[in-house]
Amino acid sequence: MTEDKPKITDSEWEVMRVVWTLRQATSKDICEVLQVKKDWKQSTTKTFIGRLVKKGMLNTRSEGKRFLYTAVVNEDESLKAAKESFLDNVCNKQVGKTITKMIAEATLTHEDIRLLEDMIAEKKKEAVDDITCNCVPGQCKCKMHC
Image (cartoon, rainbow, N blue to C red):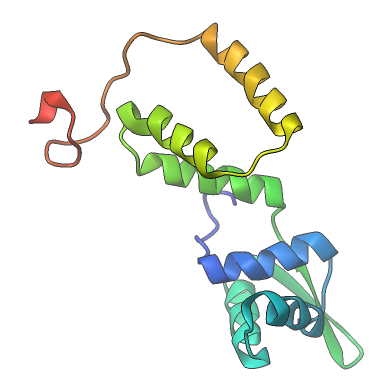
């Protein structure tokens, strides 16, 4: 998502994932996938589709009696924005620990682990001894704010 795009909810992410996967989808396509995954009624899914159209996240065009939905932004761009937004809510001194916890809880392939090892080897080259806290007093537990 670009900065001018509104944030989307977890439920709206579910709809976007279907549209990104199918590249273009009807409401029926989206409803069928999410009925299996989330057990949502058709009206629930259509509500989320409508919200995404209003937010400018989905384009819609008429094809006969049905509407086709396509994503306005791509998945990689949206994931990058979500990651940045998430990390903006974490104390700079806690980012490494937070990422470590996320990795520890994830199921990874051997290829994923190889990619992480390669990335860590590169990150070691630019590692620092200390990171400055980006919080205001009372927002984290850093020693400098106690």
